[in-house]
Amino acid sequence: MKPEPAANTFQSVRDVANHAKTRMEKVLTDLQHDMAAIRTGRASVSIFDTLRVDYYGTPTPLNQLANLHVPDPAMITIQPWDVSQIAAIDKAIRTSDLGLNPANDGKILRVPIPPLTEERRKEIVKRLHSIAEDHRVAMRNIRRDANEHLKKLLKDKTISEDEERRALDEVQKMTDGHIQKIDTASKAKEKEILEIK
Image (cartoon, rainbow, N blue to C red):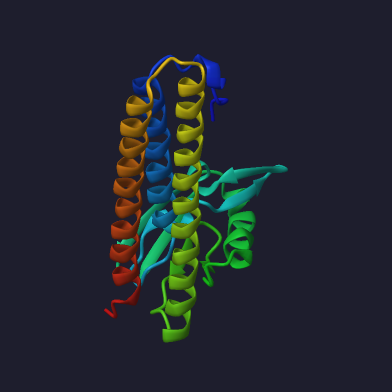
């Protein structure tokens, strides 16, 4: 991530609002990425997005070491480009918190995606809630930063009190809108997790 610009680089309310909006959009993108890696009842290669395999001492994303394929809703196949890495990939999957046990035939890994138990669904939903809350906190931190920048503009007499008040309202509306998007995405993902196929 890029370093934060110094507070005095903001010359106007628009600068502050644009900066806050850009940061909030990044938080939403990050949320989508984190939620894609959460397992649901059906097979999806995105559950391996956060998985790292020890590739000659370097933690490497699985999709940089192998072709991942979903031949049916309850199976993922993983075909390493370098067959010597199959044991490392197998180990990374088994030691992850995904609860999966791949079958290894020496050339390809077949990863059956078992139906989720009620208890496992609840654990996954709890993790989803935690991820969503972390992203809500990030939004509120961006709002706080933006409000501090606006107060500095007022203190430096760059903007009037009325402009500051309108800008604070604008930042609050933007924050509420983005938090609403987090809530909507989280509810949709929760429904997907709890849905029994």
